[in-house]
Length: 605
Ligand code: ADP
Ligand code: ZN
Image (cartoon, rainbow, N blue to C red):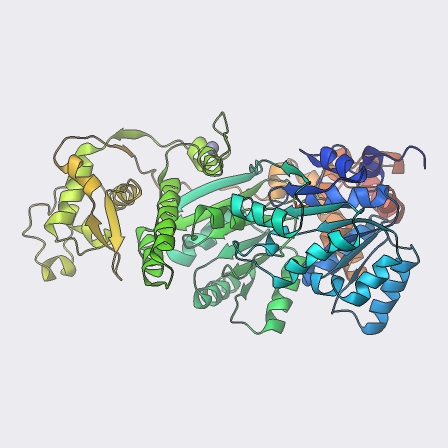
C-alpha cells in the first residue's frame, strides 16, 4: 500500500473527488503527527479530518463524542464505506462492549467512537496503553468550555490524554467559534502547541429568507406545500405547547410531522429523533432542545416560526439545513411582538445587568438582520467578523430586492402616532389608528379623536406594520411590556424634529404563490424521466437500508442518487465516478443500481 494518500482514500473509500476548504491541510498535519484545533461550520466536513488520518496512520483512532445517540449512525456510515469502525458506549450490552474492546486491542479496528466518561476510566486508559493509538479526535470540543451552552464536565478529564499518550496527535473539532470558547479549548485540553484551522462561516447552499408572520400555521402549510413537498425539515417554535399544536396541524394537513421538546418523555424524544433521521419527508417541530446531535445530511429546510434568541442561535439552528451541500432554505417568520417577548425574558431573568445588556444588544443585532435591505449573508458573515465581497444572490434580499425610499414623513407619522397614543399600544393597534380603522378598539380608547387618526390612508395596515418593525430595528422604538407596546427612544427625536432623514424599505406585495414546487429533485433534476428514475433508485435505497437497519442516507445520500440520475452509469466503471461511491459501496450496491439504471435506459420510464 505504498501510495495510499489522502486523495486516494478520499476517492477510493469515500467516493469524493476533491477536498473542501482546509480538509487537506488538516489531514496532512494530523497524519504527520501534529495536534490541531479545527473550527468549521456544521456540515463543513469535519469528520473526514480525522477519519482519513485514522486510515493513514498505524493503529486505532479514538473519537471522543458526547453524542451517544449519533455514534451508531456514524459507525454504520463508515462500515458502509468499508471502514473498520465500532463504537463503545452504554447502549451496548457488556458482552458486545467487551467484543469491541477486544477487536480494538487486536488491531482489528481503525476507528473507535467512545463517550468521554468511558474513555477516561482507568480501565479504558489501561487498555489503550496496550494498543497502538493512531490519534485522538475530540469532537464537539466546545463541550469543554463553560462559556457555551453545552458544557459537559466529563470533557474536563480529557486533559489526561496528553499526559498518558504524549506522542499521539490530538485533534479538537467544533463548530462554535467565539474567542472565549476557543481559549477554553486550548487551555483545558492542553493544546497550546496545536495548529489552528479556522474555516469560513459561509454556508453557500443555504438560502436565507425572512418574511412577516401572517396567518400562523396556514402560512407554514402554504410554504411547505409550495416549496418543500416531500422534504425533511425542522420547524422551530418558542414553546413546547406550540410544537405539539403545529405538529398536529401539519399532520392534519397531510404532512409527516412529529413534535420534539424537553418536556417529552425521553423514550418518546429518542423515538421521534430516530424516525426523523430514518424516514424520508419527515418534519420535526421542535423547541431549541432539538439541536446538537442532528447530523441528518438531507434537512432541506429549517423554519423559525418565532424569532430565535440571537444571531448566533439563528446561525447554529439554520446550520442544520443542507449539510449535504445541496440547496436548502432557512426561513424565518416574525412579528414585532416576538421582540417584545424576548426582551421580557431578558428583563425578567436573574442574569446580572451586564449580561442583560449584552443580550439586549444581541437582540438588536438580530432585529437589524431581519429588517435589512442588504444581502443577508453579507450581514450574517460580518457579524462573525468575516467579509463577503459581493452580495450572495442566494437570499431574499438579493433575489427579491426591496426598493427603499425616503421614509422620513412616514416615520414621523408613525412615531408621533406612538406619542399621541401615550406609548401604550402595540404595532397592530397603532397601524389601525393610522389607516383610520373603524374597529371597536379604536372607539374604546377614544382614538378616533386624536390627530394621527387616519393620516396614513395611503398605505395598508401591512405596510404600516412593516414600517413599525423597521423603526424598531433602527432603534427608534423600543418594544416593552407584556403586550408589546412601543415606546419612543431618544433616536426618534431627531426624526420627529425634522433634523434627520431615514430610508425605509417598501413592503413587498404578498408573494405570488408559485405554481411549481421547488423541491430538491425539481431543482436538481429537470425532466420527468429523471425524476422517475430518482424515485426508483430512492425506493431501492430505502429497501436496502431497512434490510440492514440503518438510515437510508447511510447507504447513499440524495446527492449520490441525483448524481446517478445525471450520469446514468450503465456499468461498474462508470458507477465509480458517482459522488459518494467508493470501493466498498461499488462492490455492495454497484450492480444492483447499475441494473436498475440499465433497465430504465433501455425500456424508458
Ligand atoms: P460536520 O461534522 O463538519 O458537521 P460532516 O463531517 O458530517 O460535517 O460532513 C458533512 C457532509 O459533507 C457529509 O455528508 C460528508 O460526507 C460530506 N463531505 C465532507 N467532505 C466532503 C468532500 N470533500 N467532498 C464531498 N462531500 C464531503
Ligand atoms: Zn444575499
